Image 1 (cartoon, one colour):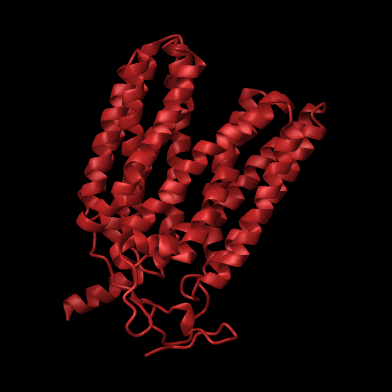
Image 2 (cartoon, rainbow, N blue to C red):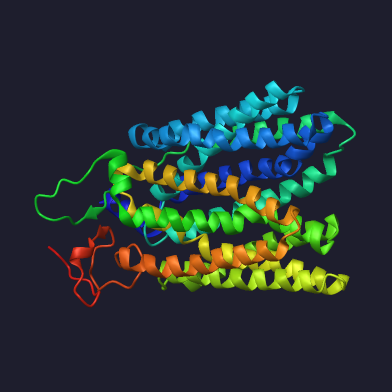
Length: 446
């Protein structure tokens, strides 16, 4: 009887203790990332005196590491569970961060960057899978939203603290930062890597009688809804996250003439917007379709690009241009808050239980590719002096986000899209599209 009550309580609230440990560990590693990410380029270029070309190569290797490890990460999670994969990822990341801080030559930095990037990207799908395992459908959106909030808060605090320590004229201060980040990954391993993660809750997926379906990666590529979601996610990460610290920053400083200190203020406003709005936005989206939330994020980002255009047109008025740039980053934060409780839960609901790690890794891989390509395109267009073309491309991409989000709706079941289900319908059952009537209403199949 006690076990039954405990199981029912976990179904309503999720595995509270393990989930708290996962969230704390995630915030701890984000704090470490905030320590170093703003200073990696400067560290290679100026502190080690290797030039901007070497710094660019280091970032390329960091991104390519994701392509090398993520295909194996998903299979590892599905076969062995998320915890061993997380521990392997933290070991790689800690080793890479420590070596990065002590490397002095380009070859050493390349090796350290690969280990660093491989470790960070290995941890991401493992942590996402842990969040799914430790939550229920009813609590999953809040769990992902809280994770996103804590990551932003941790990175923001880390950047502020790191800024007080770093001194470009003193290499030892940068070495100290990367050593601290290595220790935060050790902390992630201790806090989250030792948590008792519940087993995967089986999802009842209705299929046609006699239908076996593809297995492994073939199942992923055969899932049209997941492929469409990956396309949409790639566009989202390219247009927002891929521009956040590169294209928009270059536009603000080079075209508008925004001071670096003002740009730092704008980034801080972005983080503050997310922290303040996130849980309110979760309550707002809990009873609405996820595709609606994603389309709404695109509409908000359209407003951000309009403000960027305004900043470009009124750049002779320093105060007006500053307000417009700060508004760009704030609106980005509103859109990010809409996406945080949406993308992760959709991936979890699309994934068969046996392939949860594979689906999370595919989502992480799409993110890494988009975030790697986005800055290159943004900086190229802004740096060539064609900033109106840059803004036009971003507006078109954002309009495409809205369109693809709304069209994705036709490829999701009501459960996957967070639509209201009939009373008494099992929360862990995911009907196929063939279980829907011609009007789109749910037809329960026994």
